[in-house]
Length: 89
Image (cartoon, rainbow, N blue to C red; front, side, top):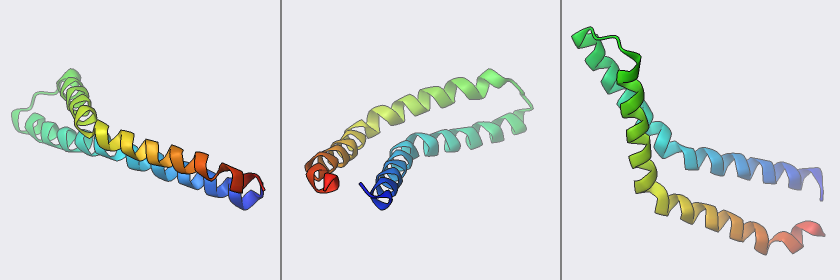
């Protein structure tokens, strides 16, 4: 294996990790902003008021995005395994 191959693996792994985490992070961001606006409007400053809805929203996003996430992971793993003989040379 050449250093370029290893760097390519690392880059692909980082890209797929960022892509897979995007739905949950985006939902968390949107819910956080909405709840922050509500907190500012009502002047209720409670930490658990933002934490619990974010966790629930992220869990719902994970369940909804799970088929897509699994498809991406399966494609990445399958491509890695199928091309493994070429990488060894």
